[in-house]
Length: 385
Image (cartoon, rainbow, N blue to C red):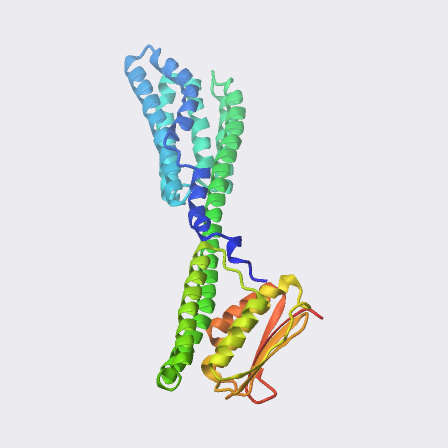
């Protein structure tokens, strides 16, 4: 069954998309995450600064400082992509960043010696969040392999085996953090998409309800106004009564619209049958309506009420019928007439499409076709009696 309008308040749905960004706010100070790891550059900085060759000392310390700044900026550049929903760097940016860090790290080697290998940890960490897992894995293997070879072949570099192990661990940790951020962003985007879909569905439901509410009420008002105009000279008392009915129906329609806006509109089968009797009488159509609705389960009463409303509205508006029958069972409801019969595209109207949606929601089917009297018939059946 289609959900009652009060089930999903439109205001809450419109506000829902704002929730997702709150779950994963932009990191205004995201650079701090990268800056913390610059502590690993303290050793190469001190070694470069203490180099007896002052030219190498200046070159080495400057290279360490520029290296640290470059790493933070590259991280920040990657992180800023979150504001546009595109995490990660482009292949060109990633290649440039890795090449820049390698060049700056190489410039530290003459002044700092083996401790300059610490810069390779940052190279692998950058690769872990800037490029694909496969490419980052290749870079980590090459770097750690190179460090292990250097530990055996280059005098004084024996201690870099620990750096190699740290490089692998740091790369795995950074990769995990970057993917966690990516998944968080994807979740936020998915929540926004779901919220937008919910808003679209709520708008569709509301427009369908408004069409069904006003379509019926305005049709009856029009018929009664026409009848009052014809009776104005022939039977002023009857005309006055019809005008009073028009006023009452207009007020009822206004109340229904207000209730729909507030999300509390409820259609009942008994009420719609009473309204159908009045509408058919105003149109001069003989009505054959069920006298009781007790056999209809409560969960189907609203759906069947919508069927009666839409079906009778169509009879009054389009059929040119002289007789209308509403057939009711515990699992089905049908509205038929002896009018002009189905027209081309009769099943494509907004009201009937709304009924089809309601029927599907309740696990039922909508059938539209010719009645036994040669007119039009609309039926909704749900399950078995």
